[in-house]
Image (cartoon, rainbow, N blue to C red; front, side):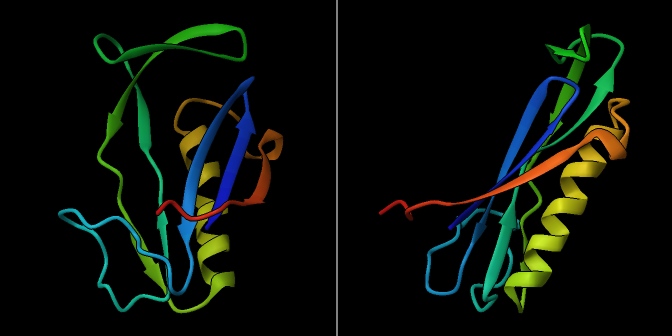
Length: 112
């Protein structure tokens, strides 16, 4: 299991790549169990009202979350590249420039 963390606007968003042989979450919309690598991460966007309050670049904004959209991949490299793109996109949705987003990858022990 890989934790892939995007840092930008003084906040962090982390998703998970489940690797071959690990059990990815099974819920409606989850990819085919045959996918060798599965990326799962929240999606969010800024809203005028409702949602949750968070601070991005020193400014308080309201964000709403969408259901995670798990995606399956054949290779580890494909999954990691998609994860990086996903994280950059989420930050862009709340006004954080892609060039300021840093990505960290951490190997984690699978949850039994």
